[in-house]
Amino acid sequence: MEFMSLKDITPDMVTIWQWGAISLNATIVFTWIVMALIIVISWLVTRGLSVDAQASRWQTLLEVLVGGIRHQIREVSRQDPDRYLPFIGTLFLFIAVSNLLTLFPVYIPPTGSLSTTAALAICVFVAVPVYGIIDLGLLGYLKLYIQPTIFMLPFNIMGELSRTLALAVRLFGNIMSGTKILAILLAVMPFFFPILMRALGLLTGLIQAYIFAILAMVYIASATRVREEREQGAQMTTSPETNQPHDPLKGDNL
Amino acid sequence: MDGISLIGMISIFTAGLTMGLGTIGPALGEGRAVAQALSSIAQQPDETGAITRTLFVGLAMIESTAIYCFVISMILIFANPFWDYVISR
Image (cartoon, rainbow over all chains, first blue to last red; front, side):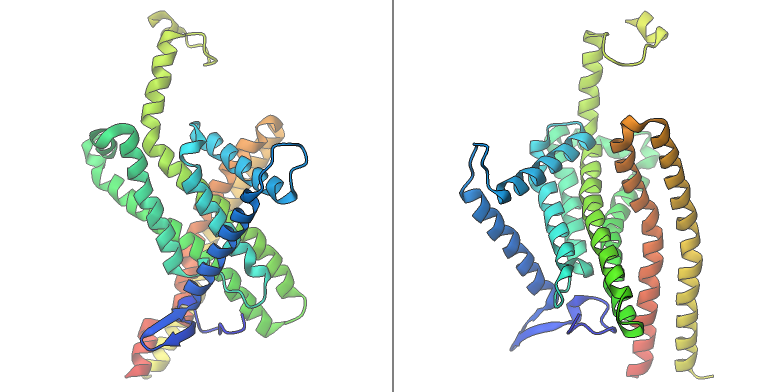
């Protein structure tokens, strides 16, 4: 908060280092710091992995994190989480770390800049068709756009674009509002209340990271779910004693 | 009344109006969603995990409308393009 004034709405406007025409703004610098932190910690921890009961604390931390992410992915997508773990886990970890580091005084969260969040949202925007085409093939994926009728085509395309915008603006707005409210409160009543708002900001940051990752997973799952439903339908015709609620009409047909 | 004071006045007035009107709907919607989720959890405590996750995702969806209003009002106050144009002229 030291070198980001109240007037600056994003950390893009804060120039930290300048050399000729090349300038580094706060977003880039703090993104690099977050990336370096994640990479160095993961590298240090995964160097000495052990399988016996006396695992180190850091290994336990990473195991809890990865296990939790895998569990959430499996719950949401009802598919094998290993395919999505690298993408979704990276999104979650990057956003969570960059939001939680607001504990430190000089730090400006890079997720409080619209360019960072737009980049993350564009990653999701690209990942959805990639996973969808891998699963369904190109024609099968394109068929999703005319799914109920062909008249829904423009609305499906608009939905695709607007949800990307919504992802970006939601994360940006939440984090930016945290820093902005903090700056305003520091100017108005500087002793006790900003600490409470900062604690609330930590909670909001973590929830926003969770929501971003879950929404990305939901979008990807919605593009790949057709195949899985088809497989489930095939399984149901072969084995009628699944745990579906009993439907007398369907039972007669089978 | 000249251009500068008109733009400043209307910008600040609109920013307040945006926040005021724009938060009514999301507040009501989030209240309804949380109340419904709480009663669902009270009826089916076993499904707490799924209900909570869906609740968070839904709350984020509802909240994003309020966040749009907040971003618009911040732009109007801190990064108003019309104001910058009038100042620079």
